[in-house]
Length: 456
Image (cartoon, rainbow, N blue to C red):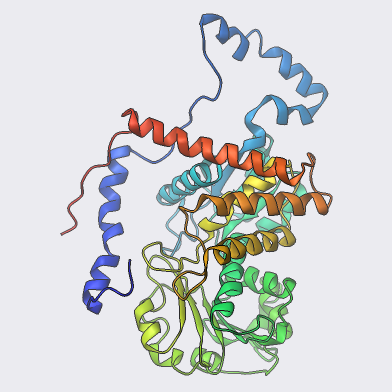
């Protein structure tokens, strides 16, 4: 969407509904978005004896002797599981595993097309924390990494922490680390656009779920003073005197921790009080519109920044934030400028992680990705409606992969250390291959042309 078009508010809202109107028919036409395909040659009948029995027994024996050879002889090094229980899907809430499957397929599509990563949607028919942890551990041997998706708070923290401890492959919760990385990238460039120093601005972070708890952690790790951050949940500003937070500290220790570490002014009160006089608003809360009020944004400092990231509808429409005086506005949607969405991060982050056979993904690797995202956009020229690259700028994923792989090597987490030039060549080859494969299938009619959908 082009924000400077002369449209009424009603016309803009109707245009924002178009993707949702098109989506059901498009999904039904293709019967989903992903499927498995082959990556090896089948030249004759004899090849079946190489790829399957009897020849396949030879690599099986070698892997049995040395399990690390699975990275050489199978697709393990380039395959991940996108796992969800459907307990918190986008802005839709607990809609269950089957209803969440289109999102997991969409995630797999983005992994493949943008990062050259083979991703498999796996939805679990349980919402029990221990059963989820066990299920992921059972399937882990077949994958080079695990992407946790759309798990409710606070169990998402327990699941991530346990699996990171108990598995020797990267486990990543995109709603936490992925959103934190792209949000940090957006903040880095937005404050440059408005001429402020990153370590001096004040933050109001709206929503204390998985995304923003991780964002605050990464923000502090990146050098932002914790006292400059005000964190808000559905009951108001987090502070040490909140009895409800103390009562729930065993169930959700992260909110209790940040109630003590952030909010140097020791503000108390509601969301409107939290927003007043801050420089940067980062909201990942209840879908809008009008979850955040236009008049509240008008109380922010001059040259303010607001990221309104709820999906599918932002907490406030971006043009209303602009009318309130905010200079730089980002949302989670691709049809508005400045998409602050983890789709800009996870394909490149996993690409770099997998290429060095890393054992985990650290916050430092996520910060390295954020810096690479920010630098890619800055090289093209920053302005109020361009602070992060779009998903169609392939170089951002390659740059992230190099930065993440390099950081993993520096931290001693890589089974396969590569030089930066080799990392770049590997990432570019896999990403370009995935995109060319899709393009060729479309050109030859193996992927049918998309149908026209009437959205009137």
